[in-house]
Length: 234
Image 1: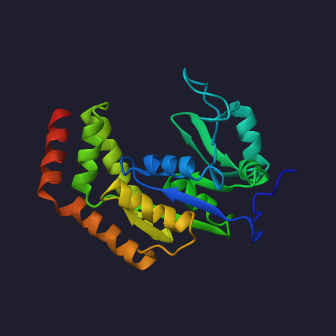
Image 2: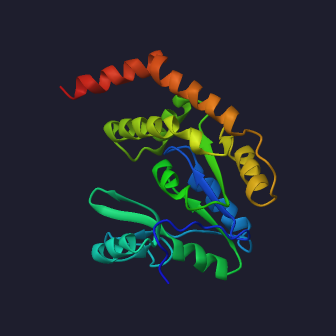
């Protein structure tokens, strides 16, 4: 049965975990390891999308594929927890997906961006939200460079998108700084699997976000990079 748009996900047993991070911070690596090592306890939520299936994708594993009309109908019925239109295609998480995972006896793990969590926050009253941060903006840039699969312009757009997400980090409950994968994973596992409090709460997390934003504004290497990219666009 479709839920109304203002439905609150209030059942005390319906714990949901939300993990977000700027692109390149390592959230997917951490989340995949978590669901692999604790497959009996937690499962990643599979998003809906209205874009065509791509080669190598498996229905229900990578995405739940549907049509644009069906996706819009789900929005109108209040069935989507969060959604966005990206380059003309819809992506989002349905409330039914959380129920599907619950019926399997597992806890849903949502890997969504800051925009998605800002939408979902009011509907998930029993959610635990975690924001993963890089130790510095310079380290984030180096990670994006290390991928070696994107142009300079694309990496620059990702870095500026990261800034927007960090500016909204105040909406998260716990923060993890991914200095080393194993350390970050242990922190994530402690919160999600062991039910422990994170070492960095909202107050400390907001302070870290402020430090990263200051680096965006003042770091000489970033000013030089910005000037180089501007010159290339001429």
